[in-house]
Length: 270
Image (tube, rainbow, N blue to C red; front, side, top):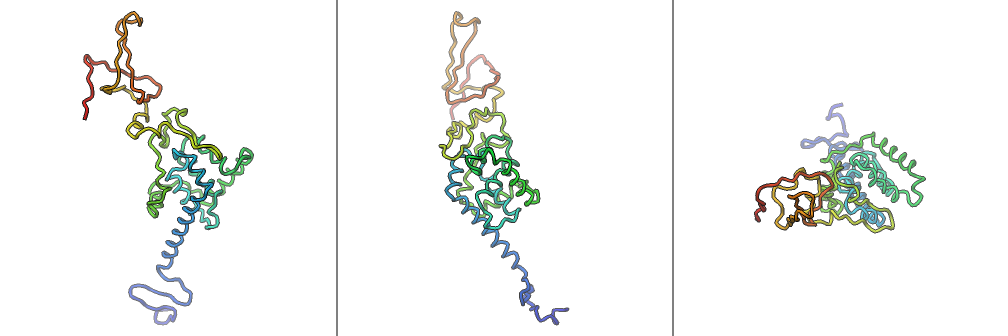
């Protein structure tokens, strides 16, 4: 039937509007935009719950709940087509655990999620939790890979929200295996005080030297490093010396190469 013969079609300026309950061009986009806004607000409102605030406070280094992992949770909710009524604590923990599965190498940190999601009797419920995670994954069509751009698009909708300030420091970066595990405190369960991280407590310029072992100690030592050359009686070799480094310079255990120059050169101050 042509437009002239169809009483339900009214011509417009460059658009076509159908009456009598028919869909209108552009209406779907508006509805989708509204839906995504409602989903984002429901998700951010969920993060404000006191129990989730407590959970997030126990991960001060953002090892299992940084801004990218949190934004992945919302992406997963949307891929699974969850109803707003399904934006719950339990689904958030399932999605967050799956996000950690996809993005993180270490197993221990994400295991803390069990304590928050399952409670004191969590040991007996882990298998069911993992089964529910797999069901959510299947509901997403097994599409668990999320591009960084997708996360940033989520954050751009509410760029000033506090959740997006959870920026992980480089020394807690993904696939960071070189730093001793003993110096990286794990997130904690309910009822415990937040862990103290000596690395995050350092000023930014001092964190950088903690990322990886240095193949060479330094081309020029800091001006406040102390050189001590003991007497030959104190050491079995006649040309021995000690280098006392500042306590503010943490070094990872390992083997370092010391280059000795004829004359000690100090780095010029700038």
